[in-house]
Length: 205
Image (cartoon, rainbow, N blue to C red; front, side):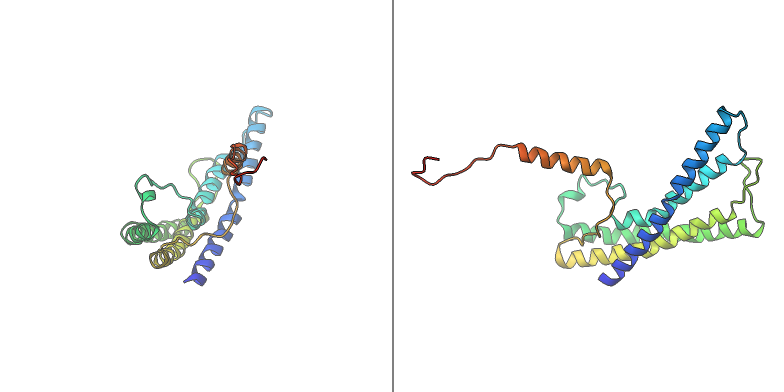
């Protein structure tokens, strides 16, 4: 199980980090559009298509990566009070009732959706540029398959936790700057707290 967890985590991380570069492409496209629209008075017909395709691709392909790092939003006002073993049992059941049915439905629907788009080489109707979007819709299927692979790894994590009562820690990875600053702030505050020193009886120091 540990070997599969490492495989799934590394696969999700590779795809997540590769497709994270979409944000630079999107930023360049939007920046270029702003310049030519407001400075040169010559807007492009393709910038809008580029921006939503890049954002959508990045959002979809980051799903499995975020799941592997336990980064999805969780309503844990009750969950966090449980023992890890109890958390794992609940998650294990919920993965079968909600996660896998939803993700498998995404893969099946996305396959039909993308297949229909590939058959007539669909282009965007959002702009006059006629940007091809059939390849973009294939991302739905790929993202769903990655979620299935990562979801199995999460089930293995639940099984390990049910046995050991300790959640396997994900590999060290990039952290949000806000989180790092908060941790540094907490460390600094702890360092400034007064510390009571207990000296042996009879000591004058």
